[in-house]
Image (tube, rainbow, N blue to C red):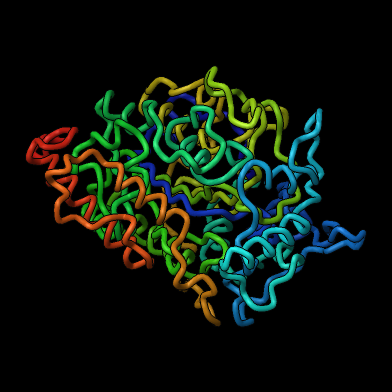
Length: 495
């Protein structure tokens, strides 16, 4: 059975009312077309639902007047899962080049989606000059590579087995941290680059605490980056945080909170799927998350959301919409007014209350789905107020739940994650978010008297160094907090 769901939100006494657990895994830096553009052929899904995918004829100019057409990535080729082979240009200016062909948006900002190849040519050159990894054989045309469904059996299997969102946009046309801020707080306080990783507003986590609704943030094998992003997460008790093994245990024991937010591992050999890291490892993580919730006692009442924070410079053919609601009155950096959404990103919704083959989108002409739609769904489900004007205007995801009796089939039975071949071109590099998290850890408020034997950030030089530093510095902070030597609640306080 398939269905095309186009609803702003569920009616009263809808299936959303039965959801007890919302679980979100947010991965890194991939566009919708790059990952799911060939999910269904000829722009048509099951039951003749419209699907905004690729025809296979879409192209970009290479800068000399020659078109570069999209092509399917061969996952069996060495390095296939490390495509596009280099780190594409990120940030506001580079995104403008990809959308408009120039670094400053025109007026009016009508996107042609024609600058991805020329932007990637510049990114390859910049990466090489910066001694950053570039996979052998990478060319500007590599950015037009698209993973076929067979290459991503987990993401594609979940998208077909439950619901895919083909018009989910990142919240702002820029890089990771502003989009992750929108995902948790519906604002980036005007920030449009990754220079700021900590914000001073209430997040969804603090809002839930204020209304006695449970939540937990899970890092993968380290402290979660999001913990250091907001005052209400920095100040939250230890019980609100865990690692992926804790998530698996909580799911198995029926202990998942109302909202679980999962992070991947941030290192260059991790499973975040940031280009040019190993996408196959991300596939394995997605499957593990699904299996954890699917096999737990709370499955019938769970909505699992697989999303990506931003497009990361990867090709997409759909111009991002205008008409976004600014979250607040804060002036945006670089003259940005927060009335444009970012590029489409992959998004899959999983629940036994979703029919297989669903393509979920809102009606044409209405406010598009973006990261703040998750916040709106949480707010709607538990009767919480909006954080900002952006999530107040966002559509809910609750309309995707159209079944009243949970399905008992498992469309992922027998599906295995892929395995990459070839060398990881980024192995040995300190990833951007690992360095961000290390600086966050360094900024944790601890008296110098507690740091006499602590490692110094300036003395860390390898990924392993950075991971040890983050763990050690975080442990020092937690110990100081437990002793009343650092700001925040004592460890003995309940969550």
